[in-house]
Length: 412
Image (cartoon, rainbow, N blue to C red):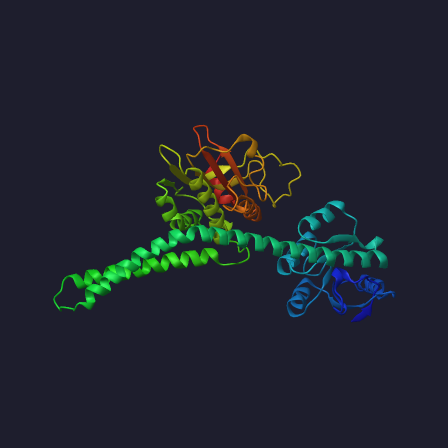
């Protein structure tokens, strides 16, 4: 089914051809009326409209064809209400979705926009100008949103590469040790092999261990540096901390810092991207180690995991349910304590602001902590920086847990 319609060119798509619309509607009368609105003349370019009558058929079509926007009815033979939008959006996030509702419901409209929809229009007030304008704005907003997301990913990756640069010296040093052991073994064996030499099995075993050690270090750094989109999986936070400490091992030891690692044994898994969380932890660990440089006395870095409930949430009012933590929610947490000078009170409110830094010029971008906050926000979590009563600073990362965590916390 194809038709002309009166739209301005959305998103400046010069020469892009017709706007491809998928109309998901099972009511023949509503479908015909919507088609008539799309057919009205006066267009700068035409639209091409495809039809689907069920959610299953619509999902099959978006997987097989390219569309610029979807007009989605919520009452379908195989799905009804808000669940229709949620199910479709989860499978077709890349396409802007304009919901056409059989009734005017402000709460439903707000919820659809909060969950990623472009708009929700009641069918009884629908008109050709309103539909054209909503389609145009929906496509433009989606293009802008995707451009911002792309820039965000580039910033996160740029900051990650700066962390890789700061870790490179330590990694080089760590790799030199196993390489030296391998070289010593080669030199020993090159002098001649005696069949009864009792040292040969030991030398070969040490060479093998050295190869595995060097391989683990390089693989760890390459995995950390890899550019990838957020991929949420059931994740063991203790394992993420251990991998981050593995990459930070030389940095911690070379600065004379004592390490205390206190994992919570019964910590439930959380939905997270392990690689992105490593980036968060390495940024926070580097900040803590650098804060203790030049300090007299004990330089101690303490990192612990545990369970708690969210408290002292300053902006709980109006936060979207399910999109952010709320007061009293069960969370898995990671705490990083240092024995540095702490954070000046006038800087606590701006420490996560982009480009804010206390380091000398050329020693950092000022994006590290803002990227940390952005990554934690993407996980629907919370990150805070506070001063400890006994001196030093504490960084706390809180991530939402499932029902299992609430059960472990009990009446806490």
